[in-house]
Amino acid sequence: MAGSSSVAMLILLFVAMNSASLFVDAISCQGAITRMLPCQAYLMGVGGITVPCCQSAQTLSQVAKATPENFKLVCQCLKQAALLMGINMGRAQQIPQLCHIDVAAGLIDPNVDCNKFNALMPAGSSRLGSSQMKSYDPDQIGIPDPSAMVIDHGSQAVSGTEGDHTLIAADDFVQAHVLLGSTKIEAPVLFKGIGHSVNPANSLVLKVLSASSSAYSANPKSKLSSPPSLSGSSISLVSVVQARNNARVVFSGSLDLFSNKFFKSPVQKAGSSDKYGKSGNQQFVTELSKWVFHERGHLKAVNVRHHRVGETEEPAIYRINDDLEYLVEIYEWSGSSWEPYVANDVQGLYLASFKVPDVYGVFQFKVEYQRLGYTSLSLAKQIPVHPFRHNEYERFIPTAFPYYGASFSTMAGFLIFSFVYLYSK
Image (cartoon, rainbow, N blue to C red; front, side, top):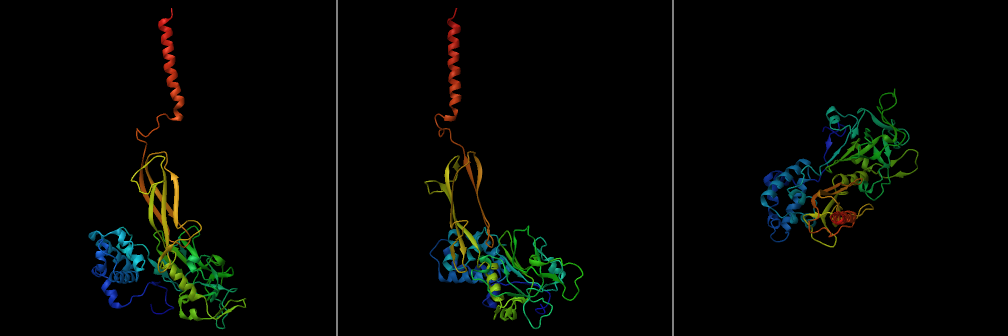
């Protein structure tokens, strides 16, 4: 990219590498597998976790998270290695907790989807090219006029050099702690760039920072001859998308929003007497980057189990009308460790008790949990259900008493009729 004012390109913000030599070593399949050799004995079920193993896993996780391409390559290599090694998956899943990382077990698991957990932060300017325009899905992000900028004559930032009111002091944040943290962003965010719209029917996209009701999108260098296509709070300045595979994308209409200049600039919103010595840009970008890189709002489900009431063993098959319990533990990544998930709509230990349907066949235990800003949980497991065996039915079924009575009354009537017929003159 020639400069910060050039056409916006895709900006990948991932964990930086410790050194260039480390990157070259681990980017190959051989390098990725070599990095995990200190863990081989532990993964094969021999001995405990070692310091070299944790160091290798941490190094490999950093390399894998450097770019989405690295993640996919390392993931695919380790999946193949895991299939050949025949590793103990129970031990592999303990590596994140024991080594304080969040990626190693996912990389080792042969069943993991290597396309998961990609993160992207595209940023735009007022000179988007056709190739960049094609990269945005209109069903999620709409940019009606790439030459236009967001103009606000009511909520502009007070500045002695800004005359076209394209420098905006925005403070309409999404009300979600999981996205922007629990600490309130007091100072407005400085924004100068393009606006976009989001599809309200698409549940995967969400506005994080919106324009005020007095804003509109237009070219500041030309006269406005017709009503703007975007205006008011329908203009999104920063939006997020979480795909169905939990990959996260943040789209910003301003490159300057991420600049050191905006980070350190004082800000005062027009019409307000509140002056801030520093804008809210740095806090806004820092908190949002934690979300997009899965440092916050990342859930996992463990210890998924089911059994009959009063038992602890998980059966391979159930019988109709059995009373059973289904349990799952949900944890949230805090940025350094897995913590029990606390929410008002589901418990950290989710338990459901119910009766097996009175119909035999193949059924599924399914859990679908979706909450704003959190990774979705989708669990499914098939289980067969068989009917009563011939010796498990009750001797006499109460609901069948009328049929029993009909049978015995028929027999009695036949005997009476036969007696009368045979012995009457």
